[in-house]
Length: 104
Image (cartoon, rainbow, N blue to C red):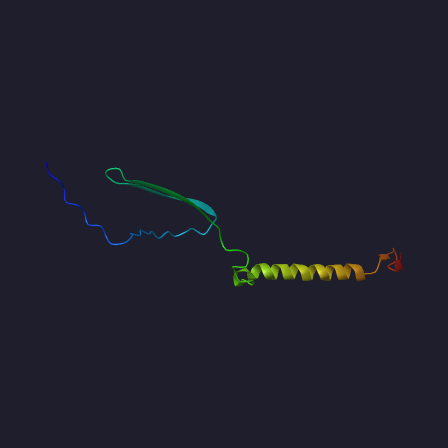
């Protein structure tokens, strides 16, 4: 009969770690550790983690990438105000057959 020499164990607890890069969208991830060693030792751990993007206050309030949208909204608003002003300020006159204007 031949016996293997006992293994040396490191002093103190052993800590394992893994770096994981999270995508830029909402998701739910399940991290599973299934460690099987010869003999009777078996370790199973499962952790579920949800990933959410930044909150609405995580971004700057005025984004420079959306200037086209800002100018579009402003020009549409100004155009509507000019049209409404001209529509309301314009008189209610009708041209007759001889070219004279009569107020209704």
